[in-house]
Image (cartoon, rainbow, N blue to C red; front, side):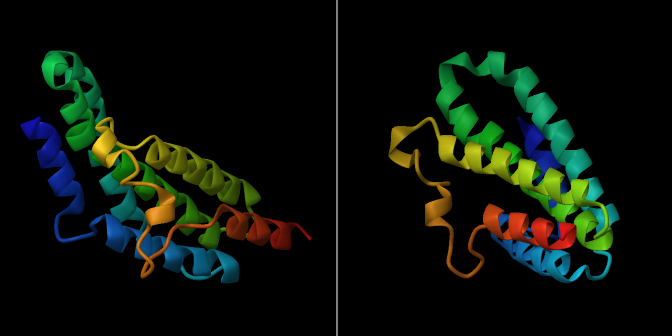
Length: 159
């Protein structure tokens, strides 16, 4: 667990928390809409690599904490998974903005967002906090990415 948190911390060190990452997603969505400039692709990829290692170790160590399975899921697995998915989404959006003639990049972004949304809807195992990550509860300052918005952009680029 310590190693998992170390990778989680390193992936965010001097960088982005979940809410700030949502803001970056909003910016990336605007870039996609206008096919703008290249984002920080290498930085995003580095965070993804760290978070993938953290998730792999978290899954591997899950059987060791059977007596604390709910807590482990809610406090270790879920935060790592959510942050990984959001970074993957940001990467796909950034690449879509940089390569507007490649609609498959936007398709990847939409698929990643759908996976992320499903993870958020499943939420915590502790029923008290089960809806904590619900997209409906997203903070109004950064909101929550809109799949329909992305589909509209994709259709605009097709036609």
